[in-house]
Structure formats: structure tokens, C-alpha cells
Amino acid sequence: MPPVIDREKCTGCGACAEYCAEDVFFGSEKENIPQVTYPEFCAHCSCCVYACPEKAIWLRIPLPMQLLYKNPERTA
Amino acid sequence: MKEKRIQTDVLCVGAGIAGLMAGIRAAEKGAKVVLAEKGHALHSGRGRGGNDHFWCYIPEVHGHDLDFFMRESLKTPKLKTMQSGTASHVLRTFLAKSFDIVKLWDKWGIPMKYQGRWEFAGHSFPGDVLTHLKYEGRDQKKVLIQRTRELGAEIVNRVMVFDLLRDKERIIGAVGIDTREDSLVLFESKAVILGTGCLDRLYPPPTPAWMASIPGNLTLTGDGRAMAYRAGADIVSPEMPKRHVGPRYFSRFGQATWVGVLRDPHDNPIGPYVTSPNRVYGDMTPEVKGVYLEEFLKTGKGPVYMDCRGISKEDYDYMMHWMWHEGNAPLLDYMKEEDIDIRRHPIEFQTYHIIPEGKIWINEKGETSLPGLYSAGDESMGGISCAATYGWIAGENAADFARDVLLPGDDRGKAEIGTKKELIQKIMSRREGPDWKEVNVALQQLMQDYAGVVRSETLLTAGLDYLRRMRRKVDQSMIARNRWELTRCLETLNLLDLGELVFIGANARKETRALHKRTDYPLTDPVMDGKEIFIRKKNGKPVVEVKKA
Image (cartoon, rainbow over all chains, first blue to last red; front, side, top):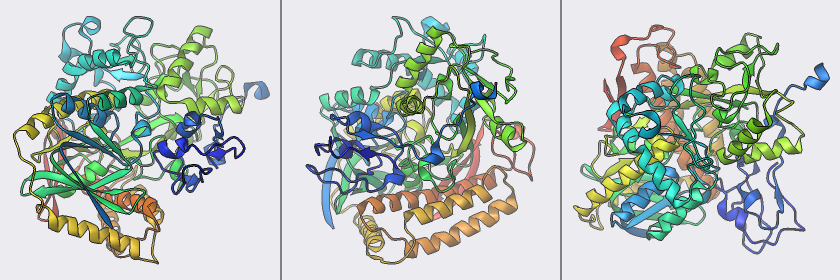
């Protein structure tokens, strides 16, 4: 479930937790690796991904939100 | 519980596009301005990820007949629904001012020109008047925040304002909570501007009970509308539904940014407007009838795909450029990860859930029916260009209003504040009971089943009865384990009030119009043309009136 934090890369700067409108990182403390307290409330806006100076966050898009598409190569 | 007191001339509730523009203009006019934002200003509201379409009237492009332009624009059923409840002279004021706002944004650093020209595309029919300016809005909020701060207005993040304070007829401030710390925030102000956005969480999302599967914002819960109603302001047409269309299931706005053709499984276009990808017009079919895609699915004719195959390299680059500015970065990133290429893969589209289009009534100055209370943005006029323009107008008039009145004394509103404190303490102190999510899901279920796509007097009467019964229970039992949950609880209480207004409005509108479908009144009543359902709280009870906006 989004967002996923790379614990090796994260420096605990808190940028992600500062900006998130949904406050999914509620309860996180600066200097520490943020906790994703409310992952199901993530709106997948990517603001944390783009705010992270270390590129330590990626969004795992949950399966119910998968994009559906037609694969013409296979049906042809 | 700690208490913080903030005194200001003008309080803007919400720091989205409307709130920021209101704050900027009020500060320019010399008012002391505070903006209260329940999230973080940089990433809140519908404009948080960007935008690429700005509905505006530019005389050098459109000619000198503004009324003609307005009539042409409102031909589109979707835009018409978005503006239901807004008086035509208010819309006219918006359009007359819109080009000034375009020029201001361009000057401040939001690029409104494309390759040195006014570029119009999307949201328009082939061969017809082009209504929407393309602009590079990816950083619009950053630019507006910078401008707000340069003018000395203060932005207070993580404070949710949840009720207005009233002294006789006048609004004298508002009550909020800190969403992270244990404190109540009391605002004393001469004027209040509500810029709190849409109502995205009242109906079940595309994936039931999965709140996050909506294209909009999870924290947009019509807070302004609900508190304005409780304070006695006029609410207009809360019953009118709107349905957006976009990628399934990765719900996103920005349908008009896609350069493609909506096709059925046999590759036939579902609409009459385009047969190959066209960067100027896109496919207008879903703006004529958003539920068309749902009907394809329900009758077994679907799925419906957005087909961009055959797009030229230039048009592909053009579309991707605007998708980025529209705020679709997460979708683009995901497609890249999954190796989905719109040049090869038709993407399934769907009709999303119901978003009620109700409004806080405003006049041409952005004033509500209560002195000292203003409103702008989606709460009163749908869309980002309307938010920007009416934010500006409301900010200007609120600053003028504030100049002529004094701050209320300390003891005003004391009883109301006491009641609010008690409400919070009760929610926080209970150990057993439904939390916000349980209440929200139960509410969505009632809305969908009793005031959804099919409506009738018997369904609406029963639904309202069920809702009120549940409400009494919720008032006695809802729990929050921390400040985050408390914030969601206060949002959900707003949703319960607004749900009630949908039922009342839908029952009062005894006709079928657009997506408000009454099985007991299947005809559109011409007598209702230009009229709206008004609801106001008087002596603790809703009062309904049918009249012109």
C-alpha cells in the first residue's frame, strides 16, 4: 500500500509528512523515518514522492485501482 | 484542551485556489489576512496537482460579445451542471473579469501562454467556440502561496475550521481544531471567506468502501457548505448530481486533456464528435452525457476505451505535456512502471461516482446571504478559473467590508464555543462506538440507495428517515482515537448534514433534470427553468424555497 519508504535512503527530513494533505504520516516525528499510519487514506497524489529530496518514496498502486487496458497485440 | 486565539480582519477558510486568491486580494487592499488550511496549502484542494484548462473570455480571441460567448460555453451539459445554482449575472461577472486574472497569473509566473500565444483546446465541440485556455498549472499553488506570503498574509496549516461564530445576523469568526495537537483554535474576524471546495466523499467511490478510489480529494467534504448552512446561509440546489468520467479504476480528473476517441470493444466511436485523435477538441461525448459509459457497461455493450492509437508524434508530446500540468503525474508514473503506452493500448474509461453540485449562494460580490460571510471556489462556482476569479472578487469585497466594522468583543460567541468544546470532548472521551469510517460508509450506502441514480418520493422520504435515525445514534456514539480521527469525524458530521440537504432538495425538486432522475416525475418541468431549490436553516429547521438564483 502506498507510499513505500526506502529505509536506507530516507534521512528523516520530514518533507513527506509536512506536505501530505491527507496526513497519512500522522504521528511521525522529524529526524525519524516517517510512519505510514493511514495508508488506506492515501489519495495517490504523489506529493510525497516529488517532495522527497532523496527519492526514497514510491507509490505502490493498490490492485483495486489498477488501470485496465486492451492489449491489441494479444487480441490481434 | 488548549485554546489558541487568532484575531484578523479577514479569515480565509481553505487555502486552495479560491482561498489563496481571496487572501492575496484582501491583503493587497490592506486587510490583515489569515488563511486556515486543514491540510498543507502546497498540496490541498482540487488544484493541488496542477491544471491545464482555464475557462475564460478573451475579447481579442472571442470577439466583443460576452453574452454570446457565455451562451456558447453553457451549451455543454457538464459545464451547465457545474454551474447549476449560480446566478447568470454572477457567471457574467466571472467571465468579464476572467481575462484580468489570466494576465495576473501570467505575470506572477503561472505560464498562461503556449509558445507565445493564447492556446485554446478541449472542453469544446468541433467547429464551435473554443472556451478553455490551455495553461501550465503544475506549480500554480506554489506561485500563489509565494504571492500570498509576499503580501504579509499568514497561512496556518493543519487547522480545520468546522463552525462559524455568529452574533445576531453577522458572522464574527470561526472555531477550528489543530489536526495534530490537542488544541482548539478560535478565530475572531471581521469577515470570513469560505473556500473549502467540493463534496467528494458523500457517495460510494468507484471501489465501494475504498475511499481512496475517487478522482478528487479525500478531505474535500463540503465543510464550508455545511457550516454556512448551520449558520443560516442560503444553500442552492444541493440535490443536483454530477458524474465525471476518466480512467478505470485509476480514478483521475482531466478527461478533456486526453487526445483520443472513446470507442466500444469493436473500435466504433461511441459518440458523434471525433473519429481520430484531435488535439483541439478531444472527445466531447462524456461532457454531453457522463453516464453514457456506465450505460454501455450495464447493458453489456462495454467496455468503453479511450483510444489514442494513431496519434501523431507531435500530438502525443502535446498531450503528455498537458497531462503533466493537469496533475496527472501519478498516472503517468504508473503507466511507465506497468509498461502501458497510450499509443498502443486503449485505456478503459468509466463514469465515476456522484458528486453533488450544491452551492453556497453568492451575489456578484461573492457575498453569501449572511453579512460578513463570503464564499468562492467550488463551494459556490465550479472549476478552477471560477475559483481564481471569484476568490479575487470575494477577497476584495471582504476587505472593504472589514474596513467598516469593528472586531467583535471577547465574550461574543462564548456559548457557541462552549458547545463546540463539549462536542469534541465527547467524541474524544468515548471508548466504544462507530469511528468516522464506519459512519461515512453507512452514510454513503444510504445516499446511493435512497438518493442515488434513481429517486422518488417514497425512496427519498424513507432514506431521510433512516439518515436522521442514524444521525441521532451517531451524535451519541461516534468515537475518535486521536486528532487525525477527530478531524475525519468532524468532516463526517458535515457530510451527514449535507446528506440531509440532498434528500430535502431532491424531494423538493419535483421533476427530472439532468442527472436528477425522479421516477415519479419523469418530465423536465419548463416552469423550473432558471429556478433553483434554496434551503436555509431557520429556528433549527430546514426551510425550502423555489426561486431564481
